Image 1 (cartoon, each protein chain N blue to C red):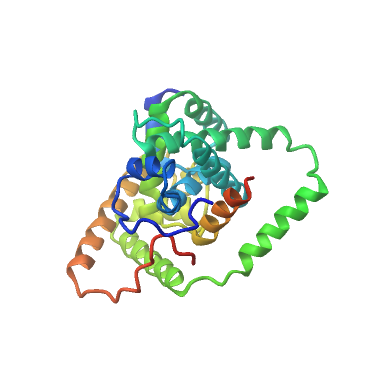
Image 2 (image 1 turned 90 degrees about the horizontal axis):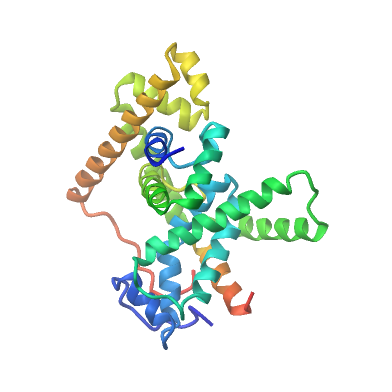
Length: 75
Length: 220
């Protein structure tokens, strides 16, 4: 997969790779691991998706506290 | 401990400024950064991993790694660009290790720890404001969807709400997979525009009741 194909797939399917055909998702992961431009596109689409579809995963405060707690314990 | 004190009320400071402050005498600056970016980092990880618990664990690892790198970090690129790269790398590593270990059973202690974490999270009552916000978002999304042309509305509804794959949607709509991708692309774009327009209208409408702003560095 090249950057143009990745961009086209993101525009159609969004950034949730679980919703992509499996082979296409694997190719996207391979591209993401080697291309900063792909990460930038992925982040932009992720941000757009958050704006449009919201964040069903919910509570951020608990996660922030857990993260800072982990740092406090020196994990 | 990072984030244990409220040292900086200026939440409009740049990420780079805050991150540089973390390595000095402003431990509260890191809490602001984590609060500012956690949602995005978790979503990036979730988009790679497809599992909320794994994504949350990776999101924590990302910020631990970022904290540890603070002394060596140089502002050569935007903080968020670097953070997103760290998040995607960690999520990909986790994805690969999960795929590699998918045949093996998890260690009993690992299972207990995960269940315990899940219980802790489930036990936290959802904040009423968060619930209201989510309902309002769903309502806005439904309104924006209803304004789309029928075929875009159907394709998006089947893809996002019924979670059908592109091939199945093509069968149901009697068109090619390429045509479905094109409908999804145009629908996503139109949805975004509609929601932005709604937001503008709301911003010019009656002033909503504001909840008490959360103090930076405060705990929920």
